[in-house]
Image (cartoon, rainbow, N blue to C red; front, top):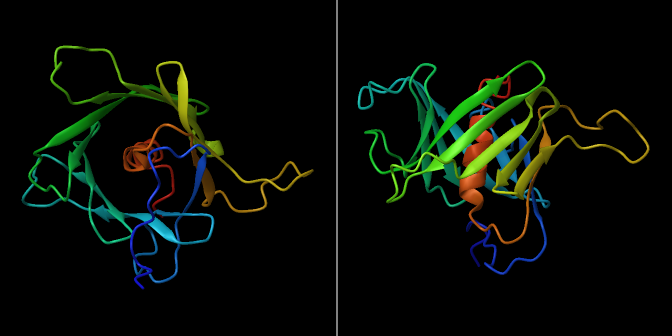
Length: 199
């Protein structure tokens, strides 16, 4: 029996799914990259940080999302201080754009992003997702319209105000009826990009 296959979540999943974000995971050689594991500690996604590549000279910052099977569903690029862009697969040439993400607010206590999915209505300037929160507290909420589709938070012991795990490890909760976990994970990677999670 193959135990290395990526976890499968049914489309009618009716309870929230928790993933745990951290910088370290046994068996992975790059200690500075983010890991997303399930409640049992199984690796669901990891993030490969890549530097400038000759095949993609316009993109100086690159992240590659890798699932538990070793596949690369989304690559994330950013040119200097411009918007983030998500591409289908391990795409070093900047093709097959899926989404773009623009930061609309950036203060010490508050950061907000708007996410635009690529579709046939390219002229439509309305965002598809909104991300709001405080990176310092590892807290953000992903909205689709008026609905919350995902949230991150630090983990606390009952009765204690201080977290019982370091800030380098926190929880991502994806709520029911939104089954594209890969897309949400990509948004979280972008939200916390450069927030001392890559060290």
